[in-house]
Image 1: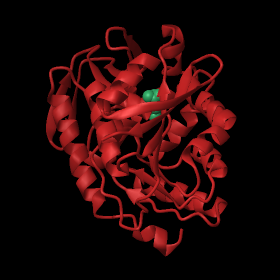
Image 2: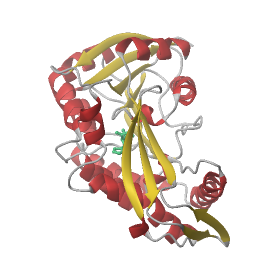
Image 3: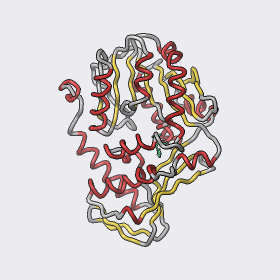
Length: 324
Ligand code: AVJ
């Protein structure tokens, strides 16, 4: 990686994020219904595990979204026009981002924003190597809060890119807030391409989050591994079982870690007790109808300009424009 790229990665953010992680863990494990925040899945190992999930047969979102991108990239590029600055919420996924980058004409800059510093660094330099003339400006930060972009990021024709249905991790209020923040970051009239996973039969949904190879289980348990490694936790990973559930009334898939026996666990000297079968809720993955997402976008001051779907209507790419 060049020094120019490395310069943009703020090392001091690391201790801030560790404190954030600790507070979230202590609060979540003290709650009557224990929970941990899914944004802490993604350290370098967690990001690698997620890449593995995208390749398991039952996890349909990634390959379907790639299919949509490959089929309609020219269409998307035509809507965006030349000279755009592409701002990705999350670091460039090795397979999706290049599809769009190839289709876009005279791109001004590519700005990936990610909380996992080393992963961001890795993917930014690999993209910079593949796209020799591309101005890559990585930003190390948490895009669940409003983000101030470096001054060198051009103001004109900013286009957000938020693939993967990552917005599904937020509850409805959180998703609305994310869209408002993104609008603020990108500016009035900006476009955003956002991948949205759609409602479908429950069996397909549950299998996508509980694959036969156990990659999703390892991904889920990685949050405990991180607590052990980074916060001095004493979790025994073999005493927690991975579970995916469909919450009908909320329209979301949930991941849980279920304690297989009564046990106590320590984190930074604090003791947390688990009953047998007590669970930690670790992730929500909301699924939308087209109508439901349109209503959400409009509430957050965005309007839906175009929607691209795969043949089976499993997944969607929405082009939305900020009216705020
Ligand atoms: C990266 C949030 C889109 O919810 O489908 C995959 C994460 N969790 N398998 C999703 C995930 C379990 C994924 N997102």
